[in-house]
Structures are given as C-alpha cells and as structure tokens.
Amino acid sequence: MSQPELKKRRRQDYGFQIEYRTRWSDNDMYDHLNNSVYYFLYDSVVNTYLMEHCSLQPPTSRQIGLVVYSASMYFATISFPAIVDLALSVTKLGKSSVTYEIGVFERGADDVKAVGRFVHVFVDRESGRPSSEGMEELLRKGLKRLYVDKEPTAKL
Image 1: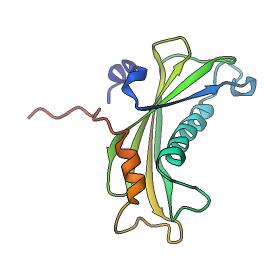
Image 2: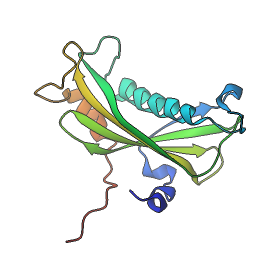
Image 3: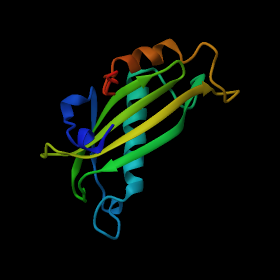
Image 4: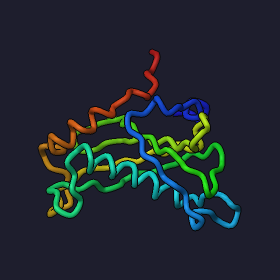
C-alpha cells in the first residue's frame, strides 16, 4: 500500500478501537513518542482484540501467535500528554496467518498519525509449527469480523 493511500486512513476504516493515554516516559529526547512505543501499541491493540473477541488466552491457549513481520509508517508526531485511539483491521487472512493494519489517531484530530502492519502466524504451542488444520475456528471467526479488503486489485 502506498504512503499517500495510508495517509488517507480514517477511524471509520477500522472495526475495533481502544484508547491509550500516553505517559511521560513514552517520549524520547526529541519530545515525541519513541518509535518502539508504537510497536508496543500495535501489540497491545492486536492482543486486546484477540483476547476479548477471539477466545485467545496467551498463557493457556493451544495455539499462539508469533510475529513474523512488522512495519510502521509515520505521518506526524505525537507527544505526552496526548490520548491516542488505536484502530485495528485485518487485511489478509490465511490458513494460519493474519495481517493486521493499525491506525494511530490522536484524540481530537482526524488525520492518522501512523499506520502499522503486523503479521501473526498461529502455531501449536508445543511444536512451534502451524497446525495442518490452520488456526482454530473461534480465532478465525473473530478475525473475519475485522476483515476489510484494502489491497488494491491488479488491473490486467
């Protein structure tokens, strides 16, 4: 997805949202959220959704999600004491993998501040390998609720 397309994202493009109140320690020496904080936020919104809507219980679930890819595009800075809305959608859903898109919005502002990508592969907790049946049905059902086709189709 191109940077200009991602920069057009709005809250309504996402099916799930949570709030995060920034902390003083989130700022770096340049007085804005450190890049590593964004990845913490991406992980938090994804796992909140998985636990609340997909029956995932990280300490005990038979399958666990391993992050195999992550990326972030930054469009504007955010600093403490901002309140941010983390917005989540699913852009690809495979047999054992899922691609999430996360929009980061500052409370009171319409423009997206950052857009992240995050890919989980769900594997068997014991073997560390994807199951031949793929991800569990409750997990897949919950993820389907967030699926939005945002990938451009090829014109041939």
